[in-house]
Amino acid sequence: MSITVEKQADLKDPQEALYRPLLCKMVSVKELTPTEKLFRLERLDGRPFGHRPGQFVQVSIPGIGEAPISVSSSPSRGSYLELGVRRTGVLTGALHEMIQPGDVIGFRGPFGTYFDVDAMKGRDLILISGGCGLAPMRALIQYIEDHRDQYGKVTILYGAKSPIDILYKDELAQWVTSTQLNCQYTVDDVPEGTCWDANVGLITQLIPPLDIDPARSLAVIVGPPIMYRFVLQELKKKNLPINQIIVSLERYMKCGVGKCGHCTIEHLYCCMDGPVFWLNDVINLAGAL
Amino acid sequence: MKAYDETDLALSFQALGADYDVRVPILLSDGTRSLGRLEEGKMALAGGKLGAKPTSVFFPQMDLVFQQKGTNVRMQAPPSKPLMVVGLTAQDADCLAFLDRFFSTNFKDDLYRQKRMNSAVVVLSGKCGRDGEMLRLSSGNCDLELVFDGDRYLALAHSQTGKAMAEKMKGGLETDEISLGRLQRESKALPDDELKLLQRASSLLLDNKVPEDFWVDISNRCIACTACNLACPTCNCFDVFDWKCGDSCVNRYRLWDSCQLDGFMREASGHNPMGTEALRTRRRIHHKLAADVIRWGQMGCFLCGRCDEVCPTGIGIKAVSREMVEKYG
Image (cartoon, rainbow over all chains, first blue to last red):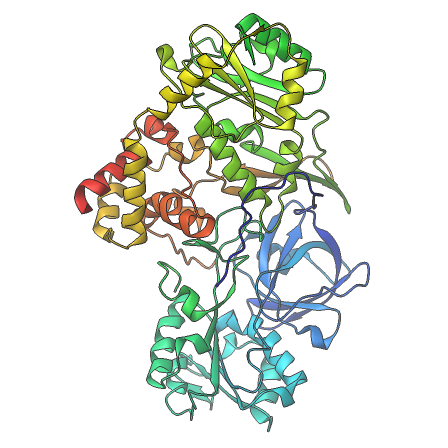
């Protein structure tokens, strides 16, 4: 990973309003699970957000604050932005409880690195996501669907805690039946009395049966921190080199632009150098995975 | 070259007040010194480094980001006059240059830069330390340097801004550069043991030769008071919060934050990449001595000594580096 560093600060060039939120309208709100909703936003000026799959935006609600949220829609689907948001903190709670279609909220960004869709061209792709890691992965999957002829075999693996926690159920069903994709999903546990006839168990159990050609494959992993180590162990057994694995890391961020310091991973800023990293750039950094 | 006494300098700073919002070291009632305006107290140039974080002039502890009323967002206005800051040491000026680059690389931080742009920095060096102690001469990271020879301050401009300031200064006597040359030699002869110690500690960290047990031991002595971060001139972490200031009016502020606090990296999900005191203590030292070296090509500590002075349990960066080098080479 190359980091650009200016030798000396140039204090005379024009300024940017780095922390000014722009305004966007909440177009629709859809419940995905009891704790997750899908929000669709459009800029008030009608312009596209200019995002790429893997990036995030800082969502701003005056009086509440800001929080980084992964974008879960591909720019190839339109000029809107979709955010799959789990209710966990103050801002996400306010998004869930207070914001209705038609409301105006603020955003900054998009920020951060993105999935290198060019490096993926011609490759077999293994897209592995756990929990709400499917939110940013969905943006990539949509992009690949819209440029399907540019990629080799595409395998989607997804794990959720229980059937009720499964995100994007309609799309997941389409991916499963698609002849263009190999999509499998599993849940960690099925509560008693729940009707369920699909896989049960950790996402790692979906990897051993896969036919992976290490020479032409590339894996992308997005999920909760605990998931990475075990998924990587399974991919290692498949002889997939670490320079053919992309990870997206989650960190607490306040500014999104590499200034506030909350998301540092050793010398890297997750908001600016990430959140999407090639595994070999972070695997040896303390606290990265 | 001109030499000035304190009366000349007070008059000069007053004159420069036409162009600048001037801040000078002011003597406080408890005998300490702090940056303030000329009318706020007695100017006290001599006495060594200022106790508080000197870079806070440009990166204040709490800073308004914007005010939002309805959908109208008004960003913080730039200062009406550029700042002129007198009283930084040479190390403080190096810290400021470090922050300048940090806030100007990649995304440019307008809150910092609108205070820093067109500002002027005046370093005090020479025999104006505490009890006449020799302060290191500047490496040039300032506009004007006032080098105290024990009697008068020799004015040394390091930039066009500094030259323009020198021309507007009042009084002063023309002097040769013999005295300056002597002070420069004295400055070069100052011991560099602490720098060597820090460089050695940095190498140990970069070579991964410091085990986790070391950080557990150091962290057992940390009470997470955050004084180290609050005093450090290069610490730049901040939190952001909203404050309701009336119906549909919100002020968004940023406020210094500390990597020594448990909640610094804790995510809403509960995941905390720095969930132990040992990891947080390591981060404080490792970031300055190793991470900054990798990212910026230089350490983020310039040996100002403030964290060692304010730490109530003796684990400032110099003390930890000393212990590290004693244990691991």
